[in-house]
Amino acid sequence: MLRYAIAAIIALGGTTALPVAAPAQTYMFETGTTLLAKCRNKAPEYALACTAYIVGAVDGIKKDVFIGRARPSCWPAQLDANKVRDIVIAYLTRYPDQRNAPASVLVSVALNEHYPCQK
Image 1 (cartoon, rainbow, N blue to C red):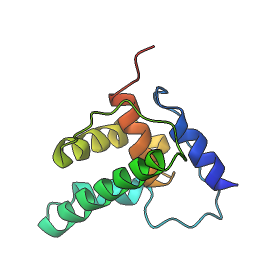
Image 2 (image 1 turned 30 degrees about the vertical axis):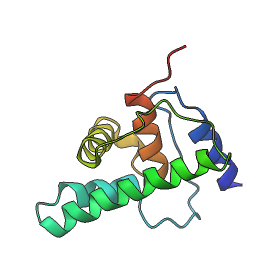
Image 3 (image 1 turned 90 degrees about the horizontal axis):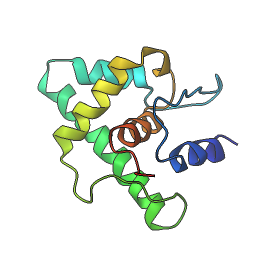
């Protein structure tokens, strides 16, 4: 069930500030809260963990698009890891009420907000 909800959220490419609620029983490696804590930590290993998580989430989303599980996004073909990290951190800072959701979903929502599809 959650898989379909996440796919639906990812498929809504142009939606901005989409409220995301994670079911309490869902296991996640990262939430928006834990990811933001890593990203804000000044230790180099945490900055690396933050960027690596975000880049991995982007690769996973792009993989879903590639195999036809998700609609194509309007993100640039080439993304800079540091810029993507900054976009995600800005989104998590701007919408604290969303931080309990899976971080991977929030990465997608943040990028969709920053790179909306033209209608």
